[in-house]
Length: 220
Image 1: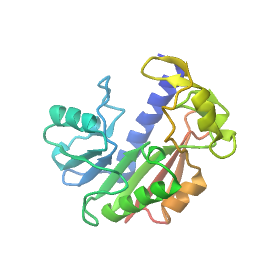
Image 2: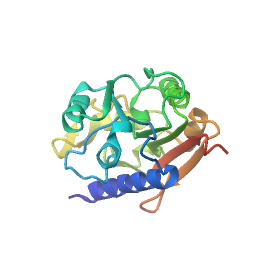
Image 3: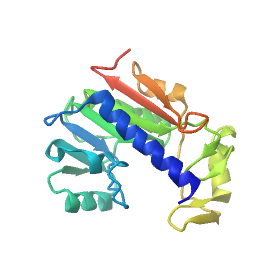
Image 4: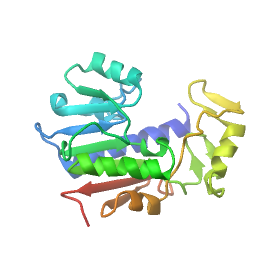
């Protein structure tokens, strides 16, 4: 396993542990996992959906029907939904907690990111939302150093010239795979989730992840 994979796995484990420590969900807590996926390696510490002990009160949402079908087949007791995170199909305050790990950077431009945040705050009483830190000097989707320090969307142009293909486990050239990626800064997350507490999670020497924690119990 590469160093980058080990760092990514440790980061995800810490986020899961932090979620449980902060929210202390109970058996009847209604929880929504936006962008839910089953870990392909079966690691129970990496995905909320695999680790959550009270699955009948857990709901899973993903825009990709393939992920939802895998969840439905593996955990039939979980309620599943195929939907856009920017247009959630739930009434206001439907869930006690909303969890979303590394989804908001994939939904489109900043207006859509703000829309996703608005929807999370509309349907959730509390939320735990994570995203990579734009200013970390290594981009883990592309696996390229310092490109996120380029102005504007320069890192995406660099990634179209060369980036790491995670499925093929090698670097490839002239790919548009990550064209919808838009990394956020702490300031932008603060705009998306006003009044929320921001946590900068650090596994290495610099915070790799920004976490917005907010709602009834966490407003500043």
